[in-house]
Length: 281
Image (cartoon, rainbow, N blue to C red; front, side, top):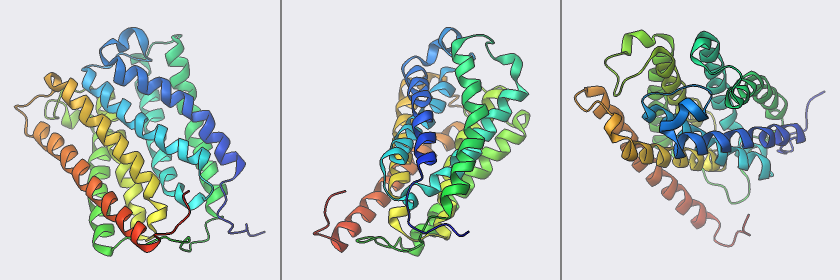
C-alpha cells in the first residue's frame, strides 16, 4: 500500500532522534570541552586533541539537526540530513571494529560509543526508508527555490569533501605524515568520516530545489563549522603548519563557513521577501 504523502515526521523517526540526542550532547561536551583528557574521559584516547575537537564539532551539528528531527512538523525539512548520518555512523562503526584494540573496553564512555554505533546506522536507515515515502515533493507555503548556480556549486564542494573523506577512510596509511596534523589509521578514518557529512547532504540539492528542504540542515552545518573554527583556534598548536594539507584544510574550513553563511543569509532574505506576512513557525 502506498504511503500517504502527508509530509509528516513519523513517531518512530522522532523517537530515534530523541534517543540519539543525549549521546551527542555528552560526546560534544567531552570532546569540545575536554579534548586533552580523552584518555580518562572518553571511549578511546584521541591524539592530538585537535582530532577530538573535529569529531566534537560533528556532534555539535548533529545536536542541532536531531533537535529539528524531534520538533519539526514536516519530514522534508530534515530528510536530507539522514543519508549523511547513515554514512557517517556506518563509517565510525566500521572504524571501531577495525581498530578495536585502540578503545577502552569496560569504560562507560566506550559502552556508550559502541551502543551508539551499533544502533545508529540501522535505526536512522530504517527511519529514512519509512519516512521518505511521505515527502509530497511540493513547495510548502512561502517556500523559495534555490538558484541552480548555488545548488551545483555547493554539490561540487560537498562532493569534493566527501571524496577526500572516503579516501582518508579507505586508505589512511597513504596520508599519514602528509595530513594537516598527526593522524593514526584510526584518527585518519575518523577525520574522513567527518568530511563525508557535507557531501552526503549537498548532493541532494541536485534533486531537490526547495530551500525548506535544506534550511535546517544547513543551520546544523553552520553550527558544525563554527565548532571546527573554535577547535582550530584553541588547538592551533596541533596543526602541522609546515604541511600544505594544513593550510588547505584551514582555508577550506574558513572559506566554507563564509560561503555557507552568505548562502544561508541570501536564502533567508529571499524567503522573507517571498512571504513577508508568514505566520512564524
